Image (cartoon, rainbow, N blue to C red; front, side):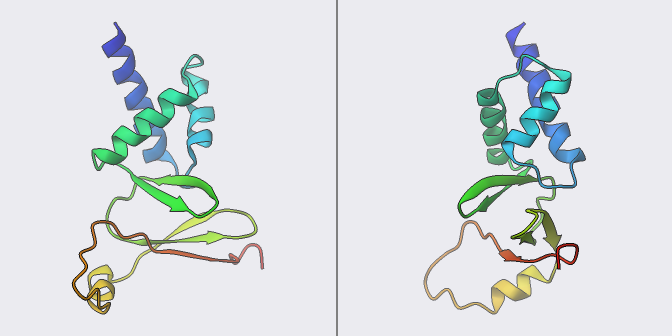
Amino acid sequence: MKAVRNTQQKELIKNIVEEACDHPTADMIYERAQAELPKISLGTVYRILRELVNEGLILEIPVNGKPSRFDKTIMNHGHFICDKCGKVYDIFFDFDKFMGDIDFKENKTDKTYILFSGTCSECK
């Protein structure tokens, strides 16, 4: 029975991220999950999010000094976060050209996070 429950929990967390347009935090995902599975724990949400990130099914966006955000869009792209309201927006550009223009010397990148911050048009 536990394996079924864990599968149900994982599927729910994955669906919440895939349906979200606001790049939710783990706490936001936890609140949404409780509506369907009231007994789900925050620890379970964190564990499942880590699994989904490690499996390449979702993207974790590290934000300095703030909780990570999670994204359903796993293709290479950047993000903009508003310093006032906290909204996160996707930014799409020619990622390969951008990375090709950077001289990493002999260093190899495994992960790249491009995060812009400032004030969004709604908060100006």
